[in-house]
Amino acid sequence: MGDRWLLRGAEVITCDPEQEDLPRGDVLVEDGRIVALGPELRVEDCRVLDLRGKLVMPGLIDTHRHTWQTPLRALGADWTVMDYLAAVRVKLAPAFQPEDVHAANLAGALEALDAGITTLVDYSHCMQSPEHADAALSALEAARIRALFAYGYAAGAQESPALPTPSSRLEEARRLRRTRLASDDGLVRLGVALTEMQVPWEQSREELRSARELGVPITAHCSAWPVSGPSEVQRLADEGLLGPDLLFVHCTWSSDEDLARIAGSGGSLSVTPETELQMGMGFPITGRALRHGVRTTLGCDVVSSNGGELFTAMRLALQVERGRTNERVGLPRALELKAARVLQMVTLDAAEALGLGRVTGSLRPGKDADLIVLSADALNLTPLNRARDAVVLQAHAGNVESVMVRGRWVKLGGALVDVDVASVRRRVLRARDAVLARVGGAAALLAERGELDRHWDTGSGVGAKEA
Figure 1 (cartoon, rainbow, N blue to C red):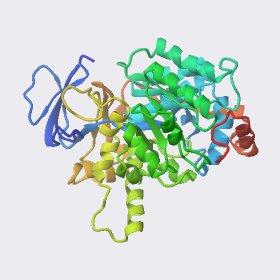
Figure 2: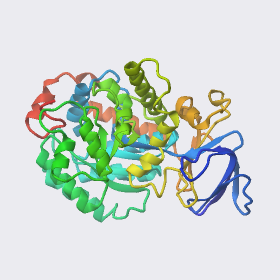
Figure 3: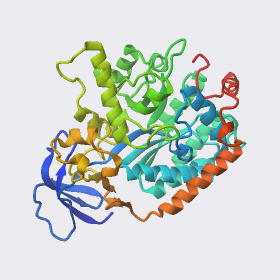
Figure 4: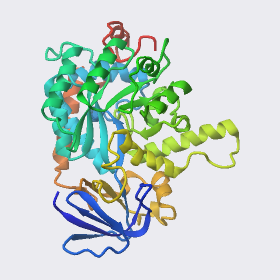
C-alpha cells in the first residue's frame, strides 16, 4: 500500500461490463487501488513498468480449494471419490498437526499466486484443534493472497480432545470472528464450510444458522453423488434456508429443479471439472447451471489428485461442455458456450459469488488492484489475435509473469517477491514425511477400505450412508 505504479503499454482485458478492453493501454495504481485506465495516460511521480508486448487482466479467482492437502500432491492420481474419502478424509486428515497445516497452506497459497490466482476459497476441513485453524490462517496471511478462509466443520475419523463435539466447532468459528477475522476489510476473511449436508441434516442446519449469525459466506459440497430422499438443496429450500450467501460445490447430480432453486435464491456454484471427471462424481454441469441462471464459477479442488491452476480448469470446463452438447445435437451450427464466458466465471462472476464484486474480479477505477501480467509475447500466445479467447484456450500458468494483490507485487518478473522458495519446499516436504509416517506410509492408505464404511456408520463421517 502507498506505492504508485503506472503499468504502461500492455493489452488490457478488463473483464468489466462498463470498461472496454484496450489493445494498448495503461493502468494507474495508487494506494492499492486502480485509479485510471486508458491509452497513454499522462502521469507524473510514479513508478513505471513497461509492459509492451504483455497482457494485463484481473487476477483469477479459485472458488474451491482444499489448500491443506498440498503435501499430498499426486498421491491420489488414480483415486476414485471413495478412495479419496477413505485415504484423505478418514486417515490422513487426523494425522495433520498444526505445523503441517501451516506448511501446506503457505505452499498452496504461494502456488496459487504463482499461477495467477489472486483470490481463493480455502475450504479448510482439517480443523482438529484451534491451533490448526490459527496455523492455516497465519499461512494465508503470510502468503499475502486474498482468501476466504472457510472454516470446516467436518470431523475427521478421530476427534481432538480440544474439539470433542460439533458445538465446539461452532464456538471455534465464533472465536475467529470475535478475534482475528472480526473485520471483512482484510485480505483474508472468515467463511464457513459446512459438514456434508446428509450426515446428519440437523447438524448441518445448525451450522448454517450459526454462520448466518456470524454474517459470513457459506460453502458446502453438494450432490456429488446420488442419495435417497430429498437433496440438500431441496431440504434447504423446504426450510427457507437458501440464500445468496451460499456457494455450492459440484452439484453434478442436482436436478433441474434444484438448479432453479439455487438461481432463484441468488446462490452460486463452484464447478471443479478435473476432480469431478476423475473421481466418478458425474460430468461437470457448467452449461446446465448457466442455462438455469446459476452464477457459475470454477475451482481447482485437490492437488492430492490434480493440478492447482485455473487455466486447465477453464479449458476442461469449456471443452467438456462443448463435447456433451455436440454429442446431443450432432454437428452444431454454433457453439453455445463461448470461451470469453468461461473467463468471466473465474473473474467477475467468482468475485460476485464471494460478495467481493465491488472489490475485485475486474479492472475498473475504484477497485482493488488485483491483477496479473501474462507474457503475450510468448510463442504459445503469438499472435494474440483474440485476447480473451487465448487466455482460456492457449495460455498456461507459465505465462504468468507478475501478480499484484491490492496494489502490492507478490510476483514480479517471473519470481515470487520476498519468498524463500527453498525454505517453503523444505517445510512442505517435512510435512509430507511426518503425515505419511503417522499413517504407516503411503502404501497403507487404502489397505483398509472397510474403514470408510465403519466411519460412516458412526454418523460422524464425510458423506451420506445412502451414497
